[in-house]
Structure formats: C-alpha cells, structure tokens
Length: 148
Image (cartoon, rainbow, N blue to C red; front, side):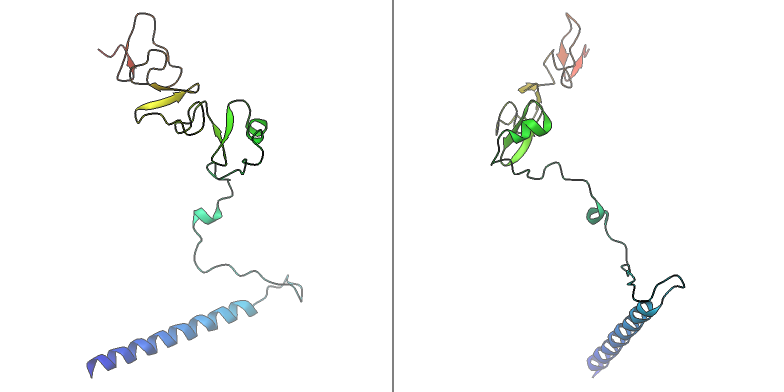
C-alpha cells in the first residue's frame, strides 16, 4: 500500500511539472516587444547554456581533408613538407606519427625533426627539442646541454 502512495505522488508531481513547463513555454512564445513587427518571428533561446564544444567554429586540425583524390592538394594548400596520409594533410617534417613519410612512427621517446626521428634526450643537434644545438664540446644528457 505504501509503494502505491509513493508512486502516485511521483506521478502527480511529474504531471504538474510538465504542465507548468509547457505553460511557461507558451507564454514566452506569445510575448512580443514594442519594436516587433507583426508577422516577424522571435527566436527562442534554450533554457540552459550550450556546451563550448558545440559553439566552436574553429576547424579541427585532425579532421580529414579528403586529399586522396588529389595528392598535390596538401602541398598547394600548406606548402612544402606536407603530404596526404590516410586521407589527411600531414606535415611529414614535424609529425611524430608520419615522420619523413606516411605511417613512419617515431619511438615513444623520439621526436620528428626535419623529417627524421631523433632522440631529443641525447642528440647534440636536437637537445631537448628540435634544432636546439649544444655548444661545441658539450654533450646532451637527458635533454639538457651540460647536465652535470
């Protein structure tokens, strides 16, 4: 008997909340401002804010550019060093997953510098990051020139 009462209260509460919401929506639809012209439509805004993900207008850099039909499209659009890999334009001079060519991945600790996979922890020409050359006579250890 107790369960039936609880279910009845929940059902009545839901019915009232739906009715109130619909009435509020209809009232907001009917209201007009003094500057409105008859026959014009009013845009209703959502009751809660939209996420920033849906509001973004910046194109996703990882999105497919459909370059499989025109292989030279990437070089024309982006410049030298760009190729069509897996239907996307990719900078093969700096992309860790397509270093020097399509599907040529660098090791976990490696970086793609000038189209070659290098270990930036120990490479004197690329110490810690690409094109960071250590001074003559100095060594690159753990990504730093002159570690000790």
